[in-house]
Length: 246
Ligand code: GLP
Figure 1 (cartoon, protein in one colour):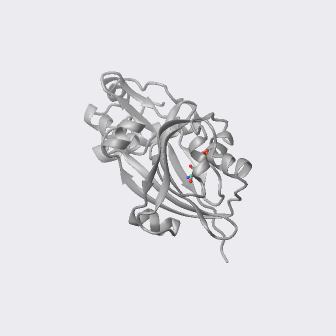
Figure 2 (cartoon, helix red, strand yellow):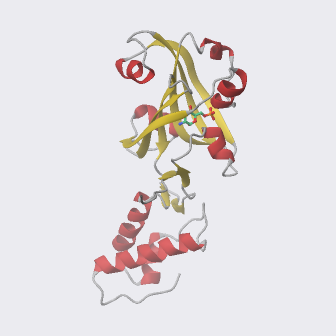
Figure 3 (spheres, protein in one colour):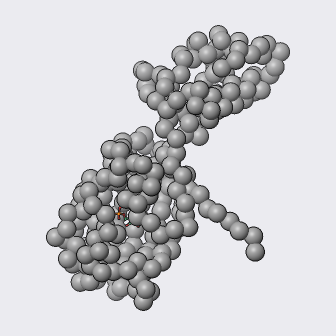
């Protein structure tokens, strides 16, 4: 990072300059994931700006997910976000493998529950009919990525209770063992903030930004197979949509 003399410039410009300098150093790989940034005091001296200004620049990059702070240890370069295309009906396992990451899951529960209004509507079943709920923490290279809660109609998918879904793919079991073809899905994406459950499961701070993904997947007869709510870590994910102009 080049030293810049910024004595005459307003603090606002100086902080934006440092922020962009760091952003570029991360983009070019000059600063690598996991690398610690020099202490704020050192950055302030090096760039001839106040510690307050340094802190402001770092806070912006923390908010953007490029840096993260570890209290008492300093500020570090974050892992790059996973860019997830939204146009294909893929499973978590496929998504992670295609990026060279090892998919995994921690089972949080598999149980028969009564369909809530929301679940019943999505799965097109009667309210309070029994559905299977599978809750998993999804991991990539052992790191928590998403908290996922899948509902499937019963009795059609009762056989899943006997399956070990810990480190295997639900889609693979559905397609290969149960002969269910997954034809299409409708997915909604919206921002959410981490509540106590997500904080505990994903190991993030309360209020951290999450992306809530809701998906209903259908078989070729357009019968709903699954209704899923997944909370993805906002600091590890971004979604990509390819657009074509008609
Ligand atoms: C993604 C989807 C879910 C789907 C899951 C299956 O996470 N959002 O709707 O249930 O993949 O993943 P896997 O086959 O790896 O268990």
